[in-house]
Image (cartoon, rainbow, N blue to C red; front, side, top):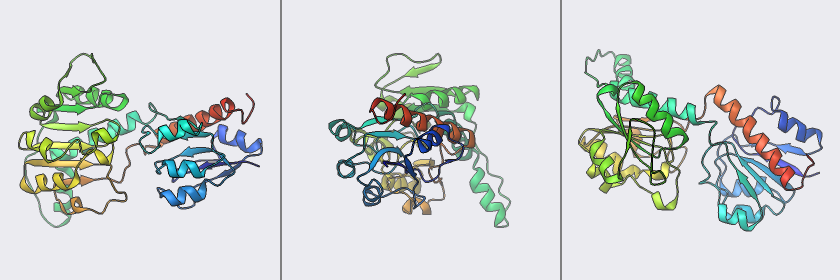
Amino acid sequence: MSKIVVSTSSFDFDHNPAIQQLITLGFTVTGNPHRRKLTEDEAIDLLSTDTVALLAGVEPLTERVLSHAKALRVIARCGTGLDSVDLQAARRLNISVSNTPEAPAQAVAELTLGLMLDCLRQINHTDRSVRQGEWPRSQGKLLAARTVGIIGLGHIGRRVAALCQAFGAKVIAHDPHLQHTSAGVALVSLPDLLEQADLISLHLPYSSSVHHLINAEAIARMQPGTILINAARGGLVDEDALCAALDSGHIEAAALDSFEQEPYQGPLCKCNQAILTSHIGSLARETRQRMELEAAENLRRGMIEAGLIDE
């Protein structure tokens, strides 16, 4: 019987009606034996010739991987981004691709807000100092007094804007795909945003055209003391340039939830003013449940459209 692969590092198979229905139809459902992000070679090994559908995590689904998966017809991403999937190769190979753009938005937005507040009030830094026997009394800063620049005003960026406005912050945004935006958020050019904002948050998908969007040149445009948040994709930020800017003090603080290489072990680990989290943006219990349910239903619908199962 044909196989379905669920490659996310964790998945609640028992409480997912769509997956259970597919099992009753006779499909073999296989999880991720490594319980982490797969490499290309591991993805090739897992997507053997009898795999017809994949409920995907963030593993690289390159043309090389997809071309080895001879029977694959459906990919359903459990999450927002599709930058890990070679969409042109998928189209050429007649593989349908879907994602769950709305499901993780609130969780990522709330984590972003938490990272902003941590940077502004130095919560992490103060905690470490107290544990070392110190009693620091350094002043933090108010979100309400900041101009927040949001790059990418999609499902997540809009929520971040609303949360920041609720705190009383001024919000500006850059999104080349928008002509108009919600009340109180001014659309500006990228150079203007870099120069005007004193807290910048990234919420755009990764592509080669925005690789290292935040590089040394972009950082030089920023005001001294700017705070940078990246809860989007690692490739958007030149991590070496950011580390240098943190060391010089030009960037006051930064918080990153995604990195070019994960697990991350790079130079930012030694920057005291950097807050690093392990790509946990969507890992809220309620969000994870919704993502898994939506992705599995997308998978089932894709299999119906591909003629693999009946309605």
